[in-house]
Image (cartoon, rainbow, N blue to C red; front, side, top):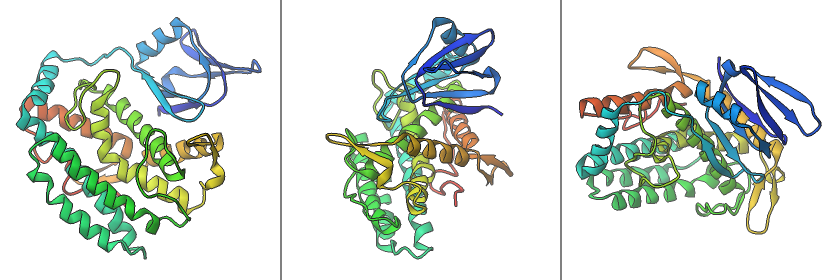
Length: 337
């Protein structure tokens, strides 16, 4: 089974015949079998050569880059091997047609907000009194179908998340300073965790998009722009609550991550290497966790669930109809416990 490889040591990555060889600063070498690599995360200083890039492109292996502070800096996206001009035209039509774009954008927010609600319901049933936050979010979700513009829709989404984040001190069994979401740069422990974990989910979704004919730069909830794969941002909204947030709650409540897991910069905190390794290991384990898919009547992993969401978008663009969008991630929510 293919898996993600995370490289934390400085060094060089080179092609060796039809495989990869990593050499660290002490000249210790390790071969990485190309057939077993799903994607590569470079969390350090790394040098490459063009023959390596050619091999990665040949095998369709994305590479994601993070700096010393665990901030995402970008991705190498291999040459697309699954392309469809007709599908691209349909994707663009759904962006330029306001009604079609709003339908998709609302569905992404419906899916994300339902999974937010499910998170609160899960913890409310386990002794955390968050009923008032659930009620408030339920009322806010009723406003989503009324939105007439992307800006209005994002306003509802922002209010839902603001209410949701207000419940986090009740859910988390540590003393935390978390009043609002701050991104650039994250200013406390929780914001740093959210930024790092959400970025990981974004890259996981991007990897699944690559395995389809979808163009990752044409999006609907997030505005398409230069130098970003905005469709990945759209799809990641669905998975952030049930993968990212639940992971953060678990890490903090089990004391796997504490204040000692961070070092303080001038205006921000950044994760220690050990904390980063813990997070990626736990997320990868979660990605391989299986759940029962009602429509397919079989168990699927969360990683494959991301692929299925991509396929549903492809189907929608082909038939001009997105029936029951994100069925297990939309109004009914993902089958996540």
